[in-house]
Image: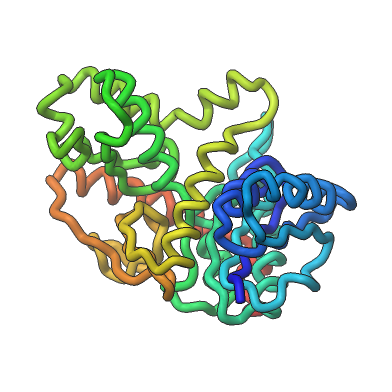
Length: 315
């Protein structure tokens, strides 16, 4: 019996995630969205591409959760992007309601699933899903670090003119401006990039990585990144479904690791069949530790702004 992945949100990120998963034959997929016809149409289009890919997985679209029963993983991408004139608190309130409802619907039908949250602001939305699901921390994760690492790797490889296969980038903390890069742990063929690039260049690449999403938004004029985020989600799903024990940077609920408690923060996580298997703790310099604490404070501020009605009731 094949595994099943539910993806909530059939926009660019959700639909492209379905594409990556289906093309690799990782699982049967249910694509859920409230807009009539959109998830059905995208699912049918994708299903008709799979004979060319020689993939036998099933892709279905739905406007409700009736076909999501017994999902192994639920990926929640649904939510509003932040628009001009919208405050941070507005975004938190609106997306907490969406993520909260999606979490309730999913866990009622798939009480043993693993949740991967993608909706922004990511760390706060992970907390919404954790509170409402009542799941242990092993089964609630956020996707951001894989994406930030991929962006950093891209820029390092381009700067040095080397294969991206040789580059392993390392980031901690929140997504975007809250990212905490660790250049001394980022390597090219095992060589720290601090030995290959001067500080000014590294700082420039770090800044571009932190602003990577905004750079794409500015180029597109309408919409935001979706190929790289979707591929990053697929990497997490692959590690869990195939029990790969892969170490990936993910938002996880810390309980004392790195001196942080009761917050979702991006850290190196070992992912396998249970979801989160282990959090990898590394030694940080005082400067790196201070940057991570600053990132945690920003996350805590977001969590404190969560509307109580959207995050209090368990499924």
